[in-house]
Image 1 (cartoon, rainbow, N blue to C red):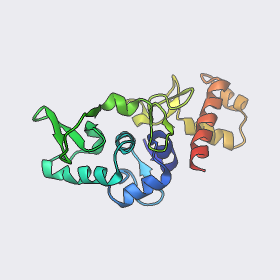
Image 2 (tube, rainbow, N blue to C red):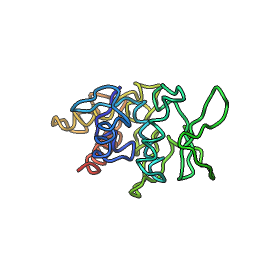
Image 3 (cartoon, rainbow, N blue to C red):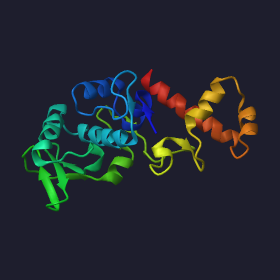
Length: 204
């Protein structure tokens, strides 16, 4: 499944301007569609959260330098595949073959390991905004990479949140939508609308 730049911004903690700049600079180019409109994959969202988490304590120049060195060490997979560590002065990446962290900027220090659980969990970005839990980014909304490729769905269903938003914007009342989808409660429809409003508020 795919993510618009607005939803990618909300879920990753990076602003739309940052996402556009990062794509332009080659830090993370959207996997699905690189031009306008930029369309991101679930793997992109995970990678963006790692970058945003690193950015909270590192300069963009240092992150860029670390990412530029990945090819030298034969790290050629999508960024979502890697675990990072940082001490705010350098960045390390986990090397599966050598079973240890490799410093890709070359500085010693006290390291904060950023594993997948950290990337999925809520955290504060550089601007002090709380980036939501990737699995439950809003009340009644669930993201599971094994369900619909990680698209945000109504909790307990396989129904994408944006389908409910589109139906609501198409002049269907919540009651009419619930009649059409008998397994969905009106409260769940409101959760989808609230999540969409949170995304739009952030990027307004």
